[in-house]
Image (cartoon, rainbow, N blue to C red):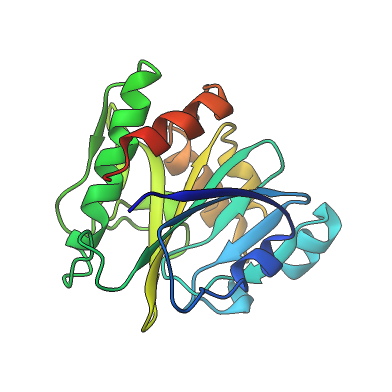
Length: 220
């Protein structure tokens, strides 16, 4: 029961629309965006976005099928991995919160190889004032931190045939950029930027080594 691995490049919207295979098999889908995109969670409305600001910045606005807050993805600035797990797999967990744990542990092991002492969050969702709006402002089950700062965010979508875990980390973190794309009062935008300044730890790692290491730590 090995893991197939593939690398994709293109637009965030098209990749989020990529259907899950049926029947599904274990797979790692690494993705690199060719243009910046603000990716909204499945329940977020498009009016949370400052459409004029996004257009001026050349940022595509799309919605994913998994939940959570908005994520700004950028070429060379975002580490994006989708993990496909077929229904009925030995790793499958009925409890949707516990379902993330095995994947978070694999990320922790891979980051240890890169010299980072990471931890997986095994508790319930931790909310903040901004977590409904911005993904990296909260902490969900299975997500990964280093020194209390979020490193890997994970969202999940389930279908009859599989679960699709969508993982994101950043190699560059400028919270003013995502704040500037949201339809906020200027004072709220300032507060969001300040509150997120130290909430996230950007990863300075060799991406090829990280991909190889993570694959090696996934359960067989």
